[in-house]
Length: 168
Image (cartoon, rainbow, N blue to C red):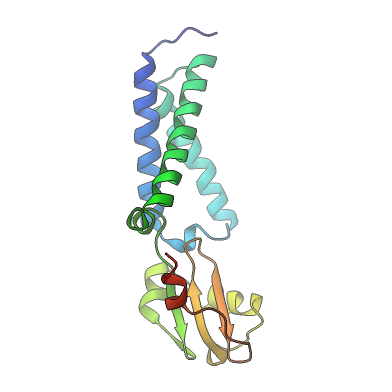
């Protein structure tokens, strides 16, 4: 139950490789994939977890092996969190940057295309923010997590992006 069938360091290495690979692949897949999960996204995440399980544990079924993999993943996650907290450049690379999606009632199509946001998803995000037409949007920002923050012409102004950046 506690005896390992592979060396402990191999489990650490396998977990680290899969963790980093998944971060890179999910980051490449775009912000839209990270925001709210559709049923298809949830199924994909469940299948991904099953697919990487054997690559991480090398067929190891002991409690000790499971604990080593879990501790490695939690440790890596904490380390990545610390690195992104300390370094703005690392944060931009790992988590991405917010991007302006709509400015002065005009959609920036290159941002929408890069994030693979469909027209219906954009309309839904606008409605969730109380806006029903793109022309009524003063500024819409696609956040790191895939959500959209909207400021309409009817709202009082909030902090601008440049004001936010001076604190970073």
